[in-house]
Image (cartoon, rainbow, N blue to C red; front, side, top):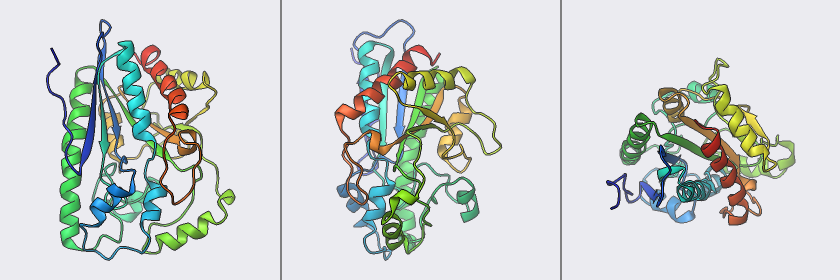
Length: 303
């Protein structure tokens, strides 16, 4: 008999992949893998852009392609399948947002001022090109519908001793461009010489709060570092971004100490080539080793 119903996909808001283990081990828990920046393709960008009345910057889809978390959903699904096949996880939910962060960010606490977002080293919850009141209402409705499913599922699973992975990917280089109405030409100018921008870590565990304190216990951090080292991938420890209260990820990690991890994976580890302003397609051959490493962490080190 199939387990009780879990979260369901919501058109234009989120997709849920629900994986059930055929032979769960004794004591196996449930797992949530959240991809809040999961809108990847041009079709998902256009599905929202076509509904907006605000005058959008020309070529804004170029920003979408470099700023969305391509490959995260594929990595998350591979991880869910692997853990359920081994019986280490009883049931895994992959929750992927279909709402482009180009218009509203499902990993942000809305209402913060520009200084708060800058302090967190993150882009704003709602960008400056969303100006029409009807657009704000539409996007807020999508955002609220997403949080109602993702947040509730993470809380329910973690309250029952389950675990959650907040999975992100980032472009290979840390390109410092202000999110403004001039974002597209500024990005093209920046990427004209990409080598001048610092290369990001291959994997960064986001767990350091703005005051420098650690939001995860040392054994958890050590276990993930060891699992990644086994496939030759070094892990940074919160050097790219702080775990900042302006993000919804902060609330999950802090609410469930040791049960939620937030991870950034460099996008070129998941694809054969990262080309700015083009849709990125994950390569299964490159996804699988990382899925194996994260699975080893979940099985052996995440007590």
